[in-house]
Image (cartoon, rainbow over all chains, first blue to last red; front, side):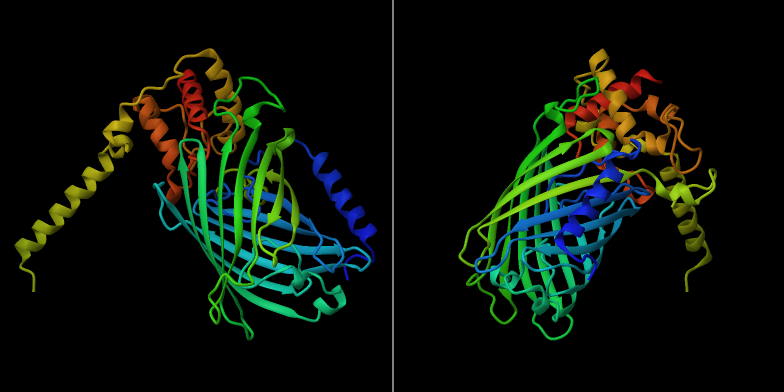
Length: 298
Length: 125
C-alpha cells in the first residue's frame, strides 16, 4: 500500500502540484483536453510531458473514490510517442492504494498529414482489479466493477494487452477523433472491445500579440463519448457502459495545462457521473540534458 | 542474366532519378493550390507580434531563439530555402510536418496561428 490513508494521498498530490507550480516556465503543453479519446497529436520529439488525469465518481452501492493516473509521455521520434502510467486510487471509508502501471506506445505509420490520420496504439497493463482510473471502458465494464472493497478488488491481478486504432482529422480548426479499442487479459479472458470518439475546437483561432491568461485562444472546448462494445463471447451492447462528456481545456501560464470534464452515464450499467480533472506540464528537450551540446538529437 | 548495356542503362537511369530528386526544391511537392495561397495576415504588425509568442512556444525549442537551428538536424529558418518558398508553401509544410525527419505536423494549431507564425518568419529573413 502506497498511502496509509486518503489524507496521505491528497497530501502527496498537493506536494506534487506545488512542485509543478513553482517550476520555472520551460515548457508549453498544447494537447487536446481529451481524457479517453486519443487524437493523432504525438509528443514533440525529445519532450517529456508529465500529466495527471484524475477521476472522481461514486458507484451505486459503493463508496466514492478518486483515482489518478500519472502519465510520463516522451516523444521518442516525431512519429513515435512512448508513455508510462502510474495508477493509484483512494476510496472513501476504505483505503488508498497504488494499483499498477501501464506502458504504451503510439506510432504514426504515415509520415505526412492526411484527411484521416491513423495511429497504432499498443499498451501493456500490469494493474490490479482495484484500478479505478477508468481511462477507457471495454467489454461489459460497469459501475459494479468499482463498488467492491479495495481488499477484494486487489486480489485480482491483471496482465492485459490493449490495442487501439486511432483515426484523427483536423478539419479547419476542429479536431475529430475516433478510437477503436480492443483489450485482452493475457490470462484467461476473451477479447473485449470499446470505442471513444471526440471533437474539440479552440474558442478562438488567431492568437493575440501579447501574453494573456484568459484569452479565448487559451481555451479548447469539445465533447467526447466512450463506452464498451462487449467481448468476443458476447459482441453486444447489452450490459455495457456508455458516457458522454463535455470537455474544456485551459492553457495556463508557465506551460501548465488544465482540463476538466464532467461525464454523464447513459445506461444503467454506467456510473451516474464521472468528474475528470487533468493537469499537464511539459519539459522541453530533456534528451539534451543527457547529451553534449553538439551531439544533439535523440 | 542482364546484358551489360542494359545494366549500364539502368544504373544511369537510377542515377539520373536520384540526382533529380536531390536537386529538386523542397517545395516542388507542394500542390499548386497550396503553393498559391497568400498569407491573409502578411506584414500585419499584430500578426508578427503574435507570431513571436507562437514561435517561442512551439518552434524555439528546436530551431533556437535566433531561428538559426543547431547546425545539424534542426535547420536554420533564416535560409535561402525559406526565402524561396511562398507563404502557401510554408503553411503547407507546417500543416504536413515531416515526421521522418523530426518535424512534427502543426495541423493541430489553428490555421490563423500558422499564418501568424509565417508572418513572423518573413519578418526575420
